[in-house]
Structure formats: structure tokens, C-alpha cells
Length: 418
Image (cartoon, rainbow, N blue to C red):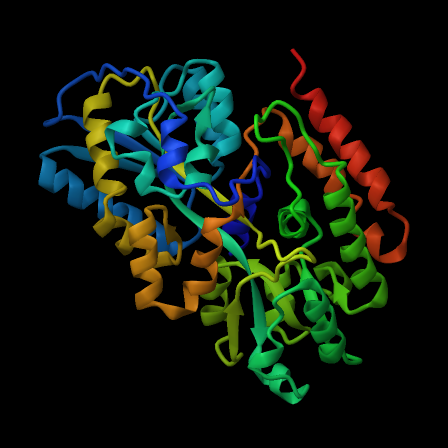
């Protein structure tokens, strides 16, 4: 889980696509003309990925083997120990892999350098995929690569603690006031009501729930220091100061899922990667996931994390590579990946089918309609790290929400300057 969480946290933000339809989004984007190279049969491709664990590794290898057998090709699969570093080395040396996992932050870097093949529309129409995911892998109005899958934040509840506190299904928080009331009831001497990670990758969900965002709709300016975001961060600080919400480090945990699994927190805010962690590490805990509560104005929001299938512009086998991605992104294969290691299909219809078959993921899938996607601005991780380092101070009063947001906006805006 830790690796998946780290991969997911490489970058964060983007424009909020509240209420956007797949059709409307696709119409606003151009389809780049792409000339494919090489044969579609009898070639050897290289696939590089970063794995969350044995289940994902086995699933990717199985998919590569199945496509190779079906298409009369061969795929050399590389499970990178440091994906970003090995990708950088491959591109610098002129030998990038033919297909690879690609984060939205790195996507913009490669697109700006004309090193990424904008093949996505050859695999399927944008309307088949969640709008936020398509936007996460678009640059300069061009959709570059097909989103592999996604993970969304939801609210996890320890149902045994919930019942012991006298709470019922009627108390499931639909808004911040209810969340705060529930957290108070669930907080005891040894258990905190809610635990969330001390990072924008978790706190940002409250921005979205209050109608806030990270950038303006045109994606030309960062808007962190907005009244909506300030109100949200003040709310987070108020819960932290009351002691009804604590960050993992405050309860001796490395992430909120650990605090939740060890019974140190009655509720947590994590993504669907927590499902596998709970099954493997904390199988005795009875729990359920529900959608993130809406903000004071009734706005729903959450955060989404994703990778795409990248193909280098310099590939001598791009025809076969696109064929391979068509297989990897097919509904049947997306379901295999979902069943194998818990990621959510990026295709709307496929994700809905998966949720219907697996009710435990329904809350995570539901958020895809209004999730805040990742930021693709080059240099963002360093800017976010500066903000994250101040989050723990919210609990003690050492950090000031207005100052934090003002600094974050100034530092982020500097990334957009020529």
C-alpha cells in the first residue's frame, strides 16, 4: 500500500470538472494527427511500470503474455524499482520503453518536450473515459495518453466503533457539520474520531467539497488562496485543534489506513488502495466506505489519482504499442486489473459494472463524477512538499491557514512563468 500511496502522491491538483460530461469535454479537445511506425506483428516491445505489490506485478505480466500470444509479438516487462528515475534515464539515453506507466506531472514535461506520442484518440473516444482522467492527461488542448485506471478518496468507517458510539446509518455524514458531530462522538481516550494524511493529497478534498479548486477553469492561474479554500482549511484546523481529527503521526501511524486498521482511528480518509491493506493486514476489522461528505453549500467533492499508458514519440514500434494499449485499456482487461489489485477502471461503463459486482468499491467509484484531478505543472512536487511540511502545525496552531495558502499560491504561480 505504501508504494501505491507514494505513487499516487507524486503530484496533485488540476481544474475541477464539476458536472462536466464526457461528450462536452471531448469536443473541447483536438485530436492530434499521429503517424504510427513499425509492424503490428513479430516485434518485441518493452513495458515499464511501477508496482504496488505482487498482485499488480503478476497481473501486468499476465496481460503482457496474453497480448503477446494473441498478437504474435513479445513483451519484455520491467518492474521498475524507481519508475521516474528509470524513465528519465531511458529518455535521456534515447532508449525509452515502448509503453510505460506515466503520472500526470511527468506527462506535461514529456509533452512540452515533444517526447510523448498523442495517440489516445486512436484507442477510444474520450467520452468513454471519466472527464477528470482525460483532462489529467491532456496538454495544450490535446489528449495524449489513455488513463490506465484511477483511485479516489472516500470516508472509511469502523462499523463496530460506530455502533458502540450509538450511531446508525442515519448518522452517516452527508456534510461537514455531521462529520464533525460524528468525530466527536467517536473520539475517546484511546481512539480519535477521524484520521487523515498530513498532505494536500488528502486535505484538498475539503477544498473541492467547498467549491474550491487549485487552478482556474482555463488552467492559466493557480487559485489556492481563495475564500472557499481558506474556509475549508480553517475547518480542517478546527477539527485538529479539538482533537477529534488527528494526523497519522499524532497517533503513531505512518498513514491514516494504518491508524484505522490498528483501531487508533474510528474513521479515515483514504483511497480504494485501503481495501487490499485491510484484507491483508487487518482482516478482523469490520468497516465500510462511504462517499466524502459535502461542504456547507452541498457541493460534493473528492480527489482522484491516476496514471496513463505512455508511449514515446520516438518509438520505432508505435503501431504495435498502440495495439498493445488497446488491449490493456479494453473493458475486459480493465476488469482483470481491478479484480487483481483493486484499481478502478478508467472507462465509465466498466467502472460502473465493477462497482455493481463489488459493492465495497461503490463509494470510491461514485466520486469519479466530481473528483478533483492531479496537477500536471512541471515542478509541482517541490511546491507541494513545502505546503505539506506545514500541515502538522495546524493541530498546534503553529501554522496559519491563510499564510499557508498564500505561500502555496505564490510558489505554484511561479511555476507558470516563462
